[in-house]
Image 1 (cartoon, each protein chain N blue to C red):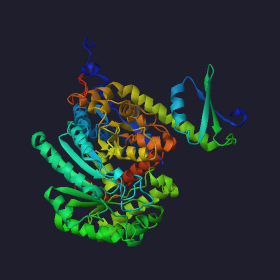
Image 2 (cartoon, rainbow over the protein chains, first blue to last red):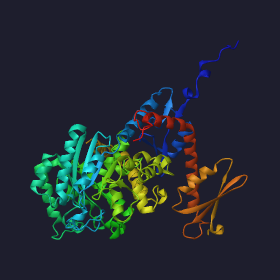
Image 3 (cartoon, helix red, strand yellow):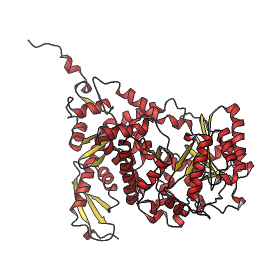
Image 4 (cartoon, helix red, strand yellow):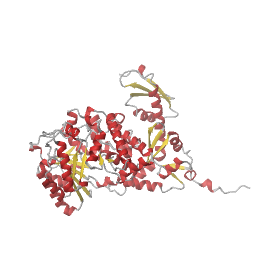
Length: 487
Length: 106
C-alpha cells in the first residue's frame, strides 16, 4: 500500500535539487571563449557552450566549470548558502572608498613652466608671467575646502606648469596644512609633480623635512626625452637624471617616482624606454598614452597615432617587461598592476580614470591657480582650451556645498554611472573599468560616450582581454603578474 | 535619408525574441552600421544600413554578427531575470553602512 506521506525529496526546493544563478555579466573574450564576472570583479573564462549550459541550469555539478562558478560565487546550491554573504562582503570592500569621498587635492601652484613640450596637456605659460601663479589667499581657501572632505587620508599634490616656479606657495600650503592637521589628525601626504630642473638642494632638503614625495617626468633615453621635452638649453634629460639622483640622495630612493608620456617618437622605442627606467633604478613604469587635452591637441600630437598603434606599443612593452621578470628582475607595469588589483583582489585601487561612479570631484579635485575648482586634472586642461564644462565653482565665490552639489559635478556622475550605461551595464569588464566623462566629453562631445566607437572603451577592453589571457598563459606569467599586485 | 533597397533585412520571430533584445544587440554594432526596426504580427524586421551609403545587402558577416549578438543578449536577459533582485539586494547591503544614503545634506 502506498505511503500517505510525500517523500522528503518532494518537499525540497528547486535550489536543493539544482543551483541558482548569482548576478554576473559576460563578454566574448575571443574565439568561443567568454569571460564572466560577478559584482566583486571575480572572473571565470569558459567556452560559450558551457556558459549556455550554466545559464539554462544544465551544468553538471561534478564539472570543473561548476566548481569554478561555485568557488567564485556565481551560483548558490544546497552546499553553499554563504555565497551571498561572501559576495556582499567583497562588494562592500570594493565600494568602501566611496564613502571616504575626495582624497586627492590638486593645487595648481602656477601655470608657468620652463619647458615648452609640444604635447603639454595643461597649456603652460612662459616662465616669467606671474599672473598665472596661485596667490596665498586662494591657497588658504583651497585648504579650507581640502579639510572639509571627510576622507581620513588627504593627499595634496602640487601641479603646474612647473610648481617649483612658485615654491613660496608650496611652502605656505605645506606648513598651513600641517598646522591645520594638528587638530584634524588625518593621514596627510604631499606630492610635487615636477620636472626637477629647478630642484635645488635647499628645496629638496625642505621636501625631506616635510616628508614630501617627488613625481617627475622621464620619457625615455636622452634623445627621446629631449625631443619630447624641449628646454632652451636642450638639457631636460640631464637635469631630470641629475635631479632624480639628488632627490634620492636627500629624500630616499622610494620617495621619487617618474611618469612617461607616449609620443609618436616613442612608439618604436618601448624597449629603450623600459631599459632607461631600469638604468635609473626604478622598479616599474607607467606606460601612458597621450590624452586629448591642451597643446597635445593644438599641436596635433594627440592625433599623431591611434589607439591600435598605442596598444601595439603597450603590449610589446608588457611582453618585454614579463621577459625581464622571468630573468629574475622585479619590474612592474603600473597600469596593468592597477587593473590586476581589481581583477585579483577585493580592494579598489582608487585610480581616478577607472572608477564608477567616476572619480571626478569625489576621487580627486583641482584648485586652479585662479581659484577655479575643477572636477579633475583633465577638466582644468579642458578649461585652458576654453571648455569650462567641468568647472565646479571658485573658492572665493562659492561654498564647499555649492561646489559638491553643483550640476556640473552631479550630472556627469549620475549620467555616466556604468551600472546604468548602455553596454557598460552588461559588460563583463565593468568591475575593472570606469566612466571617465571628461575623456568622452572631450573626444565624443558626450558625457557617456558612444561605446562602440569610444577610444577609452577600445583601449581598456583590449588591455582587460590581454591581461586575462596572460593570467591564463602559464603559471610563471601568472606568478609575475600577481607579484605586481602584492608588492 | 537611408535607402531601404540598399539595406539588409534580418528577421526575428516575435515568439522567441523581444524587440528590446534586438535593439540592445543592434546598439553594439552601431560602429559598423545603423538600424531601423518594424514589427508585424509574427516578426521583428531589422534593417541594416551602411554608414557610408554603400549597400550592405550582401554582407553575410554583418548578419551573423547581429544574430550572435542577439543570442548573447537573450542569454543576458535570462540571467537578469533570475538574478535581478539578488543583484539589488547585494548592492543595498554593500552600501548599508556607508552613510551615503542618509537624508542629511552634505
